Image (cartoon, rainbow, N blue to C red):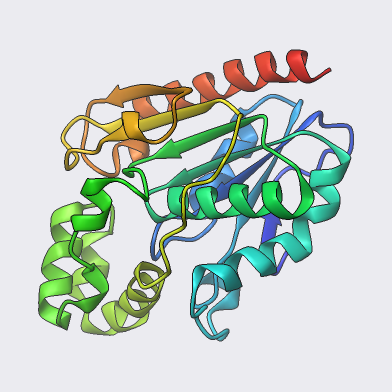
Amino acid sequence: MDKVITCFNKRPDALVCLICFPWAGGGSVHYARWAKTLTNSFEVYSVRLPGREGRAKKPFYRNMQEIICEVIGVILPQLKEKPFALFGHSFGAMTCFAFAEHVKKVYNLEPIHMFLSGASAPYSEARLQAPRRSHLSHQEFLVWVTSVGGTPPEILASAEFAKLFLPALKADLRRSRPSTPILSCPVSCLDGKEDAPHDLQALVICATVQIFPGTHFYLKEDANEKYILDYITKHLEMAEMDYL
C-alpha cells in the first residue's frame, strides 16, 4: 500500500479513514503533519501519484480513470471495513469527486464527509470555460505557476528543478474532468479569499462554504491549517456519531 497510498499514522482501532488527494504536481508530504495533529480516532492516508517522491520513475497516468482504479485497488478493503472521509485541494478536489462517484456507482459506498478545497464544481460554467493550463507553452505555464503560488521559488528559479517538477504538474492538469456525482454525503467547500472566483455553492446542494484569508494555497498558512484541522476533526466526530 505504501507505494500508491501512504498511511502516516497506522491505527487499526481508528474509527474513520481520512483519504487525502494531492494538488496538481503535489505529493503526500503536506499531509504528513496532519496525522500528528488529528485525534487518535482518525487514520490519515495520502494518495501518491506517479512522477514524484518514491514513485518518480513511474509513468504519469493518462486519465482520471487510471488514478481512480489504482487507488481503489489498494484502499478498497479499508473502505469496506470502516467509515471514510475525503479531502482534496485543487486538482485533488477533482479527484475526490471522481473517486466518490466511482465508489458510489460500483460499490454503493459513500464517504461520511467530503472536504473540497480550492476548486470550482467540475460541471460549472466557471470550470467549463476555464482555459486548459496543460496546453500552455513552457514559458506561459511557468508564469501561471508562479502567479498561483505554493511552489518554492528556488524550484521555479532552477531550470533543473523545474524540469523535474513541471512535467508532473502538467500531467495532472491533463486529466479528464469528472462528471457530476450523485451523492448524499455532506460536503464542505474551502478556499482562499484572494483565489480566483469559484462558484463553490454550485458543488452540491448540501455543501457548506468556508472562506479563509489568503490565495490559492491558503491551506499552507499555519493559522489556516490549524483551523482546517479543527474543522475536519469536529465534522468527522459528528459524522462518526451519526454513523454509529
